[in-house]
Length: 159
Length: 180
Image 1 (cartoon, rainbow over the protein chains, first blue to last red):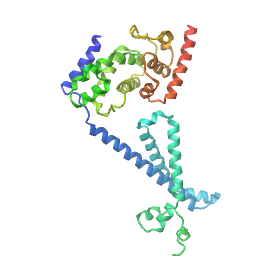
Image 2 (image 1 turned 120 degrees about the horizontal axis):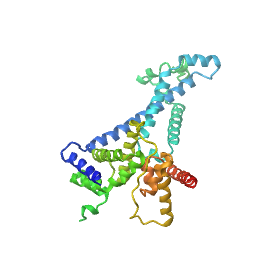
Image 3 (image 1 turned 120 degrees about the vertical axis):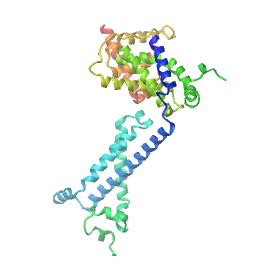
């Protein structure tokens, strides 16, 4: 019992002497905002990169053996690596949310990854990349290397 | 106006955060016994359990503004102790004895039906022999009288997993008790 009393005394003494202080509420609010921003960044980046990968495969035609090897040689691997890194970041951030432990972890991870892959593919099918190439802008320069020569004529036959 | 002793944990926490830090002593007094027993169940060393609980109350105070008063304070503080024990276990893995006498508090003041009393006795007798993954949820359920939802919040596992682990623990305990 005396040891228990010591806990109260020790802790309260440290509080009253100012040795331990409560972190301000803004600290935790900022933490939540940063977590949310990080998650949004992770989701959008992953979707964009997966969409780019899908676009790369689509514009390089069917995977005949020779073309596939050629594609692999030219494939911008950084997008795949960066997509994986941002996916992992997203999974780690999701684990910080209250709901995450209420469901089975592998279901959340599989659901998250599948949803991002699905949206990434959908964005490409919806013509997001083609519309970027049609327009001349900063994004178009970034897309260079993802589509083969001649693809521009396919989607802009009048020019 | 309610006396401070009659206030709920969450109401006291709100007061500690906004106006009266001294009320934190009330919270410590409410939980220290239970938490020392809980930590002792996990770490099997009373000295370390007391240190862990003291450290947990300090951490809880520092992070008090992150606590959501719409939720249960007891689950939050148990979770902090659980994390603290995990940290200590990782740090002193070699030092932690695997089997030692488990010293549970007496249950004189608990009014329970016969079946539950019998279960508590069985749990107390056999708990030390079952793996921690099962002993922790079952001790939280029968000894600390936490609901499945609270155990889920403390251990950060789904409620279905809590139920499964408690059921498995019962089967294991039954086998061990019968063997003994």
